[in-house]
Image 1 (cartoon, rainbow, N blue to C red):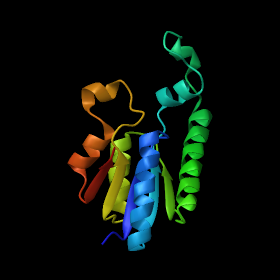
Image 2: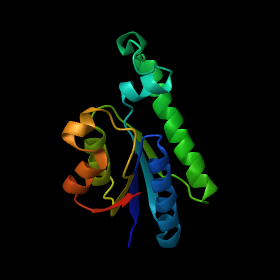
Image 3: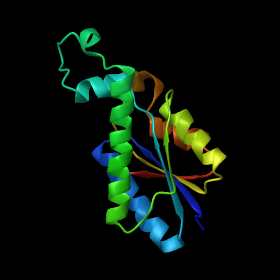
Length: 148
């Protein structure tokens, strides 16, 4: 039923829960798992210690710090999958829009299912544009599962 599952990760508890559900499905159906992460500088800045009221412009991370943070999230995702006895087929670390990257990954690998957490580490822009999960669910050409 699900040969290839794409999981969007952002380092949040919700995305880790989504990965756990994807691993359960992968075990049942013998699915390949693809992890997608799109690091966002604002989120990395927060993780590196920027706090509300602090001059975020002076604490924005370098491209290398953003890349390293993204690799850390994907490594953590692999560890979660291993905990469930699943191997990750591929990881995708892309810049740009998270929803577009998840959808493009699903198209490129002919995924049958996209799994995302419903509440992640979205930015303030998500209040205006809508969440990554909402956009994925609206634009994807395969089945989508939103995990609460």
